[in-house]
Length: 347
Image (cartoon, rainbow, N blue to C red; front, side, top):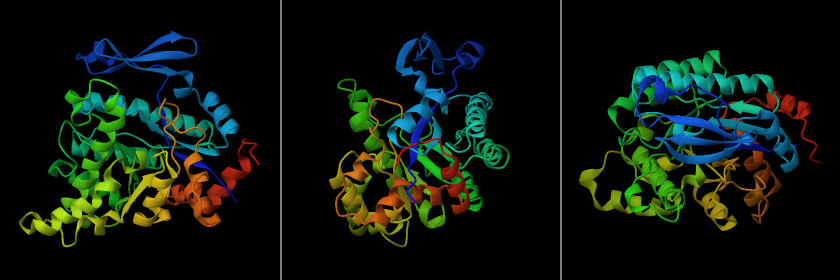
């Protein structure tokens, strides 16, 4: 039975408080409606991104899903709302608005959506507490975090408790680039999206490997956005560094040994890249993701997998939906129920 799960989609409430006015500071995102079907996300008085009602309307999303053959979308916050730079108690309020909205959307359409939450990573205990609420009270299926927190890489000691509890509670973690490195050198050509984000993701992945985080937490479930960015292609170079600089080693084995624990969405646009990732990591570690509803998204979701030749039928089915369901701890019985109740009319 084929089920298409779009693991990588973003959502935001249609309205939320003006935190910039409430708490001060210029980095809070503010949603300004531009028409009945669109808005601008403003940050510091500047237009960060124009969005359509696809980004907040579950009904519009479902119409697109039916048209494009998607059975389930995994909903995650837009990274600009992470607000790691803010006071923890203020960032927590922003996180709760996001998490409650996602949980409400899933509850309204449980056969079409699964939710990921966000937590204020700048404060470890607060992040862990909100993660517990997301999983136990809101019944979300994982947590989305950024690739760094206020310039601190993910091996900073303040994040250890978060990863420890995520492993203990079997919480899937989706790592998405934000606040990318080298932004001062990428003001033109939108390189922040096409070069900065893949590089930022590679740094985050390399950090978790080299630092020993993945060795310390061997059952931690981590997925990287955008096919892992440039990480899959620099992994041999990381291994070479581990080989020639023994005085820098913090792990028992080279980075590629622990990279087998990683998962990736399929959003790299090219079947050649998909084939490479299958050979490097195994098809079980890859699942469909489109980045809906933004401009760089894959249209139609799963296109790169459909165009990848020499896949077995089982490999294709796994990457289109089965792998994501396993990663998110969605049981086979639940998946069958969702499929049976789906309004998607795709044959």
